[in-house]
Image (cartoon, rainbow, N blue to C red; front, side):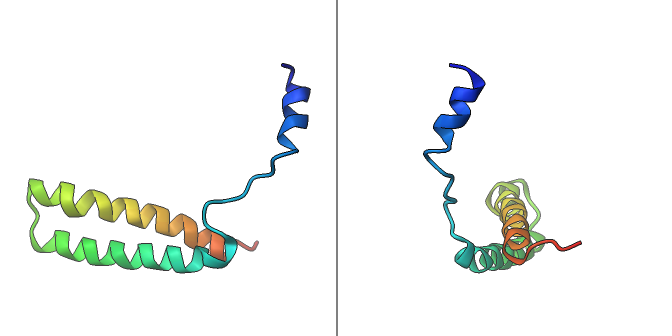
Length: 77
């Protein structure tokens, strides 16, 4: 299959995101808020177990929340 055929086949099935544009702000804000809470809980007890239970989920929630907020609000130059 050539690249041109793949390009034409892809036009028949447009991309639809998992979370719609109307709900991205709510999802992003919720993730950032949960990242703030998890970071506070991690700060109370900094042990190896709390890295896995609070630290990693907090960093993932902050990363995905920041991306969703950027997508929801937009970047204007």
